[in-house]
Length: 558
Image (cartoon, rainbow, N blue to C red):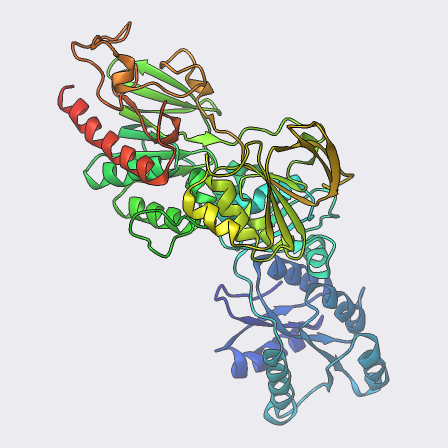
């Protein structure tokens, strides 16, 4: 490919194997359209096709393709036929000599040719520009807007495709989804040289192709920070939920060199919530994604460093420093650490569920899948607020939503305002004393067997969508043997470590632990990972802020 600039303008592509003619065509086109379009010149059909595929991957838009008829290896009609597979909306022009007008007329039917031009033209103001003007007007009138976002090509029932979409959505990365079995998805696969057997395919805005990427590779390619800028900080915050974000905002705003480390996406479980209506200051409610995005931008504005897709696997005490180790063997250290790892939903222990996870069975709201639920029957397992918020949200489009709970009703585990909302929705049904006994399906969920926990009776229902919100398992296994945890794995802190006013066993200082301080001095815990925490967004944010205050108190006595 010759002569292509970097400006993101609509492309006019011209291809001619005669260098002199090729330069003349490009010169005339640039003279008229260079200010508003990018004119790309190629001297072989293969180079032009390569250029088109590169532009397809970058998300560029090609408005007009001008091709010479007499080219070796591949004539202009054959080239335009292949170019249609890449940019079907581009207007197509064939350059011909007088002797080839018959072939040009045939091409009108073969490749839906928009126009043919006789060479040479003189003057272009009369014989070239009016034709191209009309073609550009026609193209602009059609819907071929550019797609600057990351593009994801995948299969509807691919677990990895679902994971990638959820990762991008939760990290506020704009993307567009293309099913692999639809025409545009097929064109993108062909442009990337892939047959669709390995999915998902991710194409970044600069045209880079990622095949079945893991979270860290994907994060690095879409502009998320994954590598720390320093080896030592004042404060490391592990976990990017409300508690971690609160700690990052207050730590950075008060002058601490702060880094937040998140293994998947900031926001935690709260970030997946479709609507939080009882958070102070938002009388009309706020989505978890909105709240998370604001908090992340706020932390960054104060100078907090944010690392994404980094899994923490170890915590070490090395004199006055606290070292956090990553899964890849690297590490960072700081004077202090705040553990804000939050919790994760427990796995549903029923036959068939594990094999269908990501293929109709989802843990958490999985809001990227909500559009696929339109007009369908949806099942939700769980009776806490997160399940209730999902039920209200999905009821907007689903044909029916059935909430399955083991308890007698929702009142013991769900906020009163959500119980009321669900009761007022005719498409939502609550089945008490009910559990999932089995999930079945070939490549995706198709049926559920439900069991009445009181009588043991079962019935089978058709189902393609199951969202699970059960229990809260703390993400603290990597802290085994380092800090004290309770029998369920939650981190014990503050007064709970010294119930009689005495420091815990092995405590090296002449004071008792501060309120949110763990059994390791300088290591604090905030939010849902703390033993006996309130499990509410507001309390988690408050604990994150309080932990920073205690960090300052700790640092003053170093």
